[in-house]
View 1 (cartoon, rainbow, N blue to C red):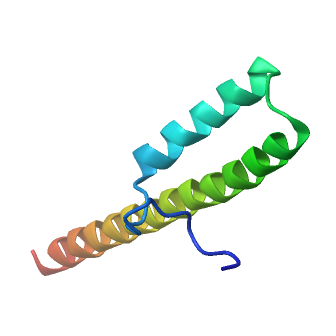
View 2: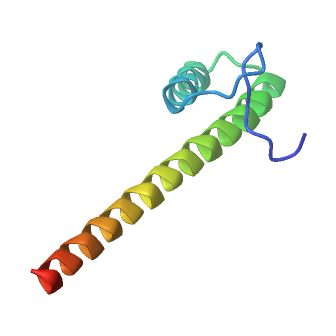
Length: 83
């Protein structure tokens, strides 16, 4: 189960929005100072996994946007060369 993205109880991958929302909940719980040491360690582990999930999704979106920009540039250059 190492490096697998966190999943919901229904085994569906979390959306970026759900993962980011859970990270906010974790931060609030840690900031409250009420978490035990064991809970703190568990929350930190969960938060790290969620942040990695979010970062991976953002990287994927960034890559897709970069591809789109390159495709647009190629189309523009082809249009200028042809016409």
